[in-house]
Amino acid sequence: MFNIVIFGKPGSGKGTQAKFLKEKYSLYHISTGDLFRKNIRNQTKLGIEAKSFLDNGDLVPDFVTIKMLENEVLLNNQVKGYIFDGFPRTLHQAESLDTFLSSINLKINATIALDVNENELITRLIDRGKTTNRSDDQDIEKIKNRFNEYNTKTSILVNFYNKQGIYFSVDGKGSVNDITLRLFGLVDSLI
Ligand code: ADP
Image (cartoon, rainbow, N blue to C red; front, top):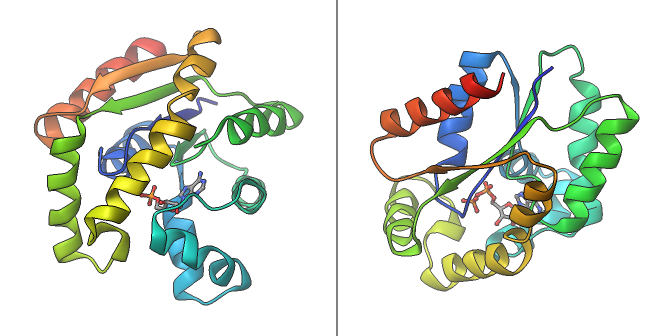
């Protein structure tokens, strides 16, 4: 099994690139953002619980997110590996993921951050907000709040994974294809 965490600030292209990685390396893609949005569309209990957090650009509380993630892994266990997109986003989530994976004899093999500056990201997100109905992409204050959540809660994971020797960063600027090739180059060198 080869398990990857892809992370980066909102708009950095995690979801887009995760799809290419999933295809190339036959991984099972778990996007916590997509799972929340699916639950919101279907008006499940989880969706109702999570909605206001997504609408405001706040992180959903850890206990809700961690449980959802673990269920998704357990329900899809006949796979060659996972690509975790948008999880973990807090130190507690990262520690829980390690504990959970080791309880089922798995581990994270690589964490890859897509590096893009915030000005470029604001342009990308506002553009995305015009073509999707994501309310969190249509308001500059919500976008800034998501950056703030990232900078205060998620960026410390660099250190957490660096200490484990599994942190890598890829330049997230350029064409989608350029970035995909950078990622493939990195993953090929690790597998
Ligand atoms: P983006 O990275 O562009 O913000 P995502 O689809 O990954 O888009 O996430 C959208 C929203 O879903 C987040 O702003 C947050 O409210 C919620 N979310 C996703 N993943 C997590 C997580 N691991 N922990 C808490 N909240 C999350």
